[in-house]
Structures are given as structure tokens and as C-alpha cells.
Amino acid sequence: MSYQHVLFEVADRVATLTFNQPATRNAISDEGMIDEIVSVLSLIPARQDISVLIVTGAGEAFSSGGNVKKMQAKDGIFAGSAMDIQQSYRLGIQRIPLALYELEVPVIAAVNGAAVGAGFDVAMMCDLRLASTTARFGETFLNLGIIPGDGGAWFLPRALGHQRAAELTFTGRLVDADEALRLGIVLEVLPPADLMARAQDLAAQIAAKPPQALRLGKRLLRAGQAMDLKHFLDYSAALQAACHGTADHAEALTAFFEKRPGRYQGQ
Image 1 (cartoon, rainbow, N blue to C red):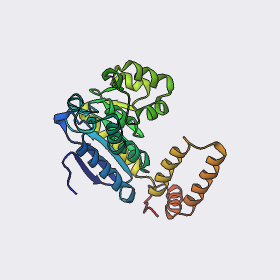
Image 2 (cartoon, one colour):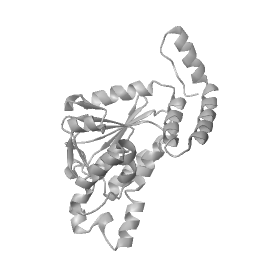
Image 3 (cartoon, rainbow, N blue to C red):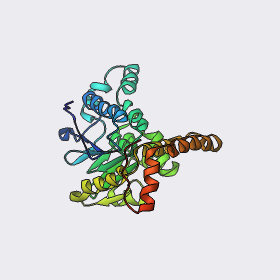
Image 4 (cartoon, one colour):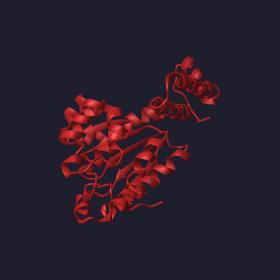
């Protein structure tokens, strides 16, 4: 399948999704961009040859979030009455957090530049975040007299805690890469030339794990955010029992005792 707004490739169990609209600094509020992002994300669950997804941006920005020119012109998802705009959000950009949240493969954001507004929120929807030294982050919605309509206010407190999420939301200030590291927004900061190589190296380490157990491990982390301990432990036991019955578990034990890397088939 060919795309006009994104690039998508798969190699060695690692998929890479690149926002590819540098002229708009990879704004993700346009319908074409939204449709293609969701299309790619919807393909991944059934792709057993994919164990990890890397998300990055083409050009100098990761994503500038909403297209402010269309916002000013009341065009695209910003057109019409309040009810029209509500529906546009629900049927448009809000499909991205739902699709990302449902992914059972780990997602790494390789933040190559500015990630502001919805662009920052998309980065925070990923499991792991690496940043270039040129990256900038900002929950900048209030600066434009709007609120995070893309689900960012749900993800941000879960990632950073309420107090820090509140400070970033209420001030709308920009955070450079070094501060993002201190705040726990990103895992590592790297020179621009090294960012994708490090993301691919991290993805390769993760993709080397048994594919079924990896997906179940992510499912478990997600479930823990919404379940009480008793039901969570029951759920963990059920998933663990499934893992114990796999050929990959047997191979992992054999590889452990033979002191060699495992050779996993996703079975």
C-alpha cells in the first residue's frame, strides 16, 4: 500500500512509521494524515512479523500538532458549528490515541525535533521516547485558547504524574531535550545523527524477545492501569499459563541453559 502523508517500512521485525509532511512540520490534524496514520496502526495487530514500532518525523519536526493555519481559517476539522467540530474530533484525530493504545507491540517515539500540542501528545502515547538534542516538547493548547482535544490530558498524568502534567498544561511552556530527560518525558537524549540508530538498536533488543510473550507483556502493563489488584493478579495468572504452554517458552529455557540466544517462532 502506498501513502502520501506517511512512510511505512518493516525490516527484521521492526516497523517504522514516519510522519512525512515536512512542509507543515508534520501537522497531524489534516484528514489525510490522520487516515494514513490510523490505516498503518490498524495493520500492525495482524502482522505477526512485527514486534516493535518506531514513530518519527521527516524533516526538522516530529510533529507540530494541529495545523494552525487551518485552525485560523476554520477549515478541515476546525470547520462548522460546535457540534460539527466535536464530531470531527471524534471521527478524526481521536482515532489516533485509540489506535495507538490498542497496539500490543511496544512503540518507540524517536523525537527528532519539535513535538508540540498534539505532536507532544502522540509522543506521550508511545511506550518509550528517545529525543534528539534538537527536540522541543510542549503541551501548548492553552496558548491558543483551546484544550487537549486529542486525549493528551488522559495520557500525560499517567506518564508524568498529575502535578507535572498540570504544570505543563497550565503554562503551555516549551521544554528542551535536557529538561525532558530530567522530567522523565524521554528515556535518552542523543545527537541528531545518532537518534534513529539508537531507536533501531533499542527496537532490535526488544524484537529479539519471544513475540507472543512480548505482546502479552504490553497487554499486562495496559491492564494494570485499569484493574484492581485481585482481578489483575487473576488476569496475570491466565496470561502466564498461556505463556508456559508455548514453544517459545520451551526454547527460551533451552537457550538459557545452553547459554545462547533464543530462536523464537512466535509459537
